[in-house]
Length: 459
Image 1 (cartoon, rainbow, N blue to C red):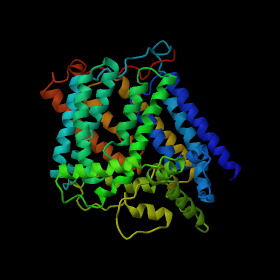
Image 2 (cartoon, rainbow, N blue to C red):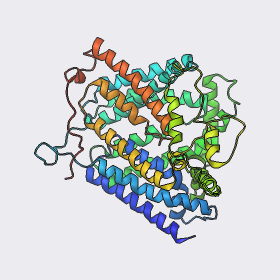
Image 3 (cartoon, rainbow, N blue to C red):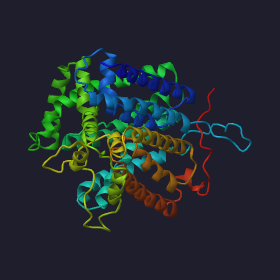
Image 4 (spheres, one colour):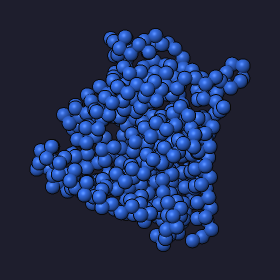
């Protein structure tokens, strides 16, 4: 392969080293959401190449168009890490000195954990009854994500105060709900936006050492092993062959398939790379995009912002605009910038690089992911140290979770994040007005300004 791929591999190593050094310097990964965002975006275009190069696997699958994708992705990785460094620089106090390190997550209490779990259970139970209602169904589905947030908060509380009761209750609620969801949908019961933040909180919240990364590796290996088993056995659910049975019988039959697949997993670097191509790496579709853009004769095919304008239509609730057109989020969006076509409207997942490249090529990708990473890191830092009221905290958490899956189409994610933020804002205001003593850590701070936006200064 060309020397350009050697340079991309070096960029990946430098970016990884920069992120590790940042965590050592800051001595915390906060909630782990920004780190997850960095991983999701970079792995979407580079995981197959980087893992293959790391283990000396063959690279015949790499075309000239793949090399173009890797070239801008290497710079994008460096841009993400640079944005995190900039966003997490210590703040200044009024005297111009580095601000004193505030307490992390001062608002996390056992009551808030139970409150979040209750919201999540309410949304989970209500969603099957309202999923078909425009806007209401979306808001209810987003409300169910508070079950996940409640578990994340329980891990934070356990790390801060060693309170095991709330963590145990959160696990007893989250795991069965995830199992039922998986048996009905075929999607993984333990989502990445829960597993990765929990792992980073458990290992890096209070202190970052070499042992933190050893523990992270200890988390990663069994999770990867379980993912192999899930990928091999989920077909039993998705094929529909279990739908005729009761939920308990369905669980029993799937457990037999899952156990069998786990016992026969092939865990070689080649197999791992194939799973990356199937579930994480999207360099193929990004390469199709670059090939389509460069094949145009005379003029380029870039959108120059029109994807954001079209996507803004999705911000308007159907309750207000019942007949609004569907202009984003489906296969026609991908086909428009790859030259491919499909006969259905099946949703096609793409990384945020796809939309950014469509609007102006490699420079827009690099600049775009820098801005998104900076916004994510600043928002997470604000949430980690804020003492603002509940009606500020809850919408902020919903917006932060919009970054947890790496973002696909920017306006669609913004629409989802704003819908969730508005929903929990109404709930938070109702709690503040009608149940002011339910969460006492907020009752006495209704007009309190946030502490300086800084995380612990380096030792």
